[in-house]
Structure formats: structure tokens, C-alpha cells
Amino acid sequence: MDTETLCPHSNDYMTINKKERYSHGFRWKLGINTNPCIQSRKGKRCVYCGFLNYRNPISPLEVGQVFNEVFKSSDLSDIHRLELYVSGSFFDDEEVSFDSRLEIVKSVKESEIKEVVLESRPEFITERNLESLVNIIDGKRITIAIGVETMDDKIRNKLSKGFSTKDLTTSLGRIAQAGMRVQAYLLLNPPAINNDKNAIIDIIGSSKEIINLASKMNCPLILALQPFFLAKNSIVAEDPSQENPVRPPWLYTIALTLRLLDNIRSVMEPNLHIILGNEIDNVDPVLVPSNYTSDGNVCPCTRRIKKYLREVNISREKMLEIVHRILESPCSCKRIWESEIGCEINEFNL
Image (cartoon, rainbow, N blue to C red; front, side, top):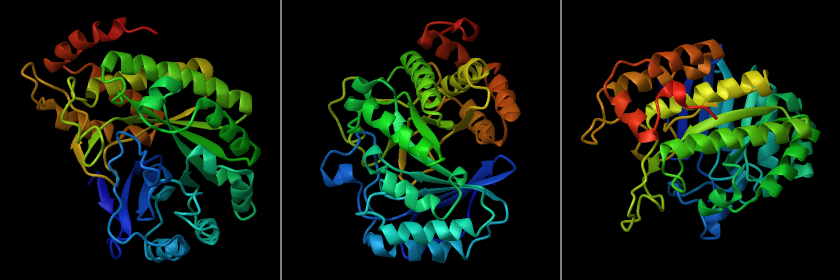
């Protein structure tokens, strides 16, 4: 089984509870149904966001208790990395109270889990919020994840992210000062691009820029490549007036992007860690990354290749092996993809 539930949802408080192969063990994706993200509260949620809170979100004061109920009843023996998701930002007091945050981090400290990933928008990444955690746990065990999506402010604005590269830069400085790592989510082929070739170009340019930025800040960086998928309830999914309907990237596009990112790693930052996200999330996917036949239908090779991609995060060697296998696929749909991006695989240079 590629993913499995660690324990049942607790009274609809959990939005996701899955584990996936990662490094020498597993990563645990745990989502808690908190009050809505600040963007949703302002009526400005990201255009691709399909997360509409489950009924009866729990209060910020109860998040720590709900977390511990699940945490202490789960088998943690092979969990290398805990990814804790709320409805928006872990450091937003309207979602997770200050005391709940401390309660959660204290529990993680006492476990053997090497890394906990906490997501937040830049405006909540303050010195006070970060210092409160490193007073409890070694900052090297904490990764602060930010939905950067792209380093192009114009594209990010079209996605309604609500923050700038300047805001991101400030956050990186604070994360570095606290001795933590940053994980930058980069969105492959978001609705504001909706073209596989241009999507690859944006990811590569954004990766180079954020690697340079993190290096200047002396902030350890993880690049998290997140292929876009169309989520139910998202603004783009519910827009019937689109002249050019959005489509997730080809699986070949994902593989080629990973190869190019590894090339960048070799040249710019040998210690850079790259991970691949998927559509197994706390939302319902409508369209997911696939390969296509000449008539526009999903190619039968999709299932096999998606199975390969689920093992990318085991190691760099495994990633390179899988990328090679995908890009050398004999399936006829690969020629359709090459025609769409305007060149053959080996001719794609940046």
C-alpha cells in the first residue's frame, strides 16, 4: 500500500491522516480542522485552494489537545517526518493558540521524530513565534513551510497569495536566525501559467532565485515541488467562463522538472533537499497530473508512472532512477507531450 491511515479520523477534527514513503521511513501528513485561513476570512482565498472547512472547526485553544489525542495513539516507530497541516497558518492565533502550539511542540520533542514541518504565511512568522518554539525544541528539528508557489510576484498576485517576495525575504531572515529550515513550496503549472513549457521555465527560474536568496540569508532550504491539481470547491474549478480551462501538468513534465532541479542542485547547492508533493491532500481533487492520448483522454500509462512517482522521496538515487525510467518511456504519448512543449527531452535547456 502506497499510503495508509495511521488511525481513524476523530470526530471530523482531522482533515488528513496519512503516511507515505520518505527517506528511511515515512512522512506523516496530519491535518487538523481549525478555523479558516486568514485569506478565506478576508474573502481573498487563493484561486486554486479547495479547502473549505469541515463542519464544526475546533477552537484554537483545543488544537493541542486534539493533536495529542491522535499523536499519542499512533505508531510513530517509522515516522521520520511529521507534516502538520491546519486550515492556513500554524502561527495564526485565530487557528492555533499560542499555548496549543507549545503543547504540540513539547509532544514532538519527546518523540523520536527527526523533523516537524509547520506551515505558515509570512505575516505570522515573527521572532516571538519562532523563539517560543526553539525555547522548547532544537530548531534544527523544525522546518517552516511557506507556499511560495513562484518567485514571480506578478504570477503570485494572480494566484491571490497576498504576499510579496519582500515579505518572503523577511521571513527567511527570521527563520535562519532561529536556526530552523525553510521549505518552499513551488507550484508546477499553476492556473496563472497553464502551459507546461512555461511552467518548467518558471519553476527553474524560481528555484535558482530562492536558492540564491536562502544562501544569502544562511537559511537551510528544502524545495518542495508541488504539481498543480484542480481541487473541488476552488475558484478555478467553479469558473465556467474559462476560455482555456486549467489543466494539471503532464507526468513527463514532472519528471523533466525533477531532472532539471537535480542539475541545479549539482551546480548551485549540493546539499539542497528536493521533495515531490502529490494530490493526496486535505481537499478533493477533480483533475490530477496525467499523461494524455491524442484524443485528449488520460493515457493508460498514467497509473504505472504515478506509482513510480510515489517513491521519489525515498532518496536522491531513487529519484534519478525513477526520472530516467519515466523519461525513457516507450509509450507513444511521450511524443504528444514533446510536441506540446515544443522540443524533445534532451533539447530542453535552460
